[in-house]
Image 1 (cartoon, rainbow, N blue to C red):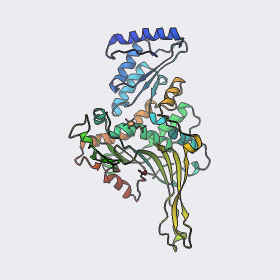
Image 2 (image 1 turned 30 degrees about the horizontal axis):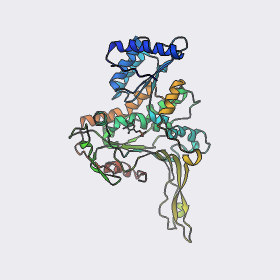
Image 3 (image 1 turned 90 degrees about the vertical axis):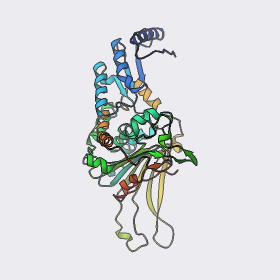
Image 4 (image 1 turned 45 degrees about the horizontal axis):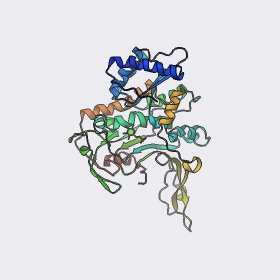
Length: 416
Ligand code: BG6
C-alpha cells in the first residue's frame, strides 16, 4: 500500500501519478490494471477523469483494464447529471465508468430479485390484480452529522431519492430480466424508471411533502433543530424529510400507488418495503364480530433488521369468530448468521472483476433525476413557509400521514 498525495488542480500531478503507477505496475506485475475510486468532492469527478485520460491513464491496451468508480452525488439535477455523463463519456467508455450506489451492495436489496424470481409463489401475485399499494420507508435517526454544509446544498430529495430509493423501486417493480448479465438487469430497471409518471406542477403540490426537523428527542436525548446544526444557516429552507406518491405507468402497476418517504431524525432507523395486498371481501364475516378485514402485508426489511415478514389474519382461539394479525417471519441471521457489511465490499470487488450489474448506467442516473426534477423546480419556486414542521424523533410532518390517509391507507412504521 502506498500513499501518493497531491492537489487535483495541479496539472503536473497526473503525470507524476502516471510515473508512480507505472513503477508500481512494474514492481508488482499488476499488468497496468487500474481502478480509480473517486470519493472526492463532486465538482472534481469530471476534471479528474479528464486529467487521467490526458496522461493516458484511462487507456486500455494489451488487455489491461482501467475503470473509474464515481461516488454520489452524480450531479445535482438532471441537467448537471447529463453534463457530467457527457464529460465522462468524452474521455472514457461507458464500460469503464462505475457509478456507485451503496444500496445495491446490500444483501437485502440484492435479495429482492431472489425473492421475486427464484420462487414460484410470489411472482404470479406481484401485480395490480393482487397488490393494493407499495410503501418504501427509509427512516434515519441521525441528523446531518458533520455534513451540514453539504447537506444544506443537497437536501433529502437529492440525497436519497434519485439514487437509493429509485434502486428499491426499480428492483421491486421491474420485469424479470432474461439473465443476470449487467445490461439485461439494468435494461429492466431503466424501463421502470422511465415508466414512472412524471409529476406535473399540480402533482408536486398534492403528491409530494417536504419537511424539516425542529428540536426534539431521540432515544430520550434532546437533539437540536436542523437549523441549529453546524454548517446550517439559521433560516435554512432545506428539507430533511420527503414523502411522495408515484405511479408507474405500465400494465403491471397501473393504479397501484408507490408511496415513499425518507427523513432524518425519525424515531427509528429502519428501511423497509411494504407490499400491501388487496383486502379479501368481508361477505363471509358479515354476521360475525369481525367488522373489517385487514389487508395482508409482506414486508422486506432492508436494514438494520434484515428479513422478510408476511402478515396475515388468524382466528383468535375462542368460541366466537375474532381475528388477530400474525406474522410469519424470516430473519437472515437465523439462517445465514450475521456479517457486518456496508455494501461497499461487494461493489468494489464487482468493479475489480468487471461486473457492472450493480452499478448505475448513464441512462438510469438521468432517469432518476427526471423523476425528482419537477419537485426540485416547484419547491425552488415556492420556498417552504412552515419549516421546521416536524419535531426530531417523530415520523415527519402530519401532511405525510395525510398523503396516505386521504387514500384510506396508513404508513407502516417500524417499531422503535
Ligand atoms: C448516503 C446519504 O448516501 O446514504 C446519507 O448521503 C445517508 O445522508 C446514507 O445517511 C444512508 O446510508 P445507509 O447505508 O446508512 O442507509
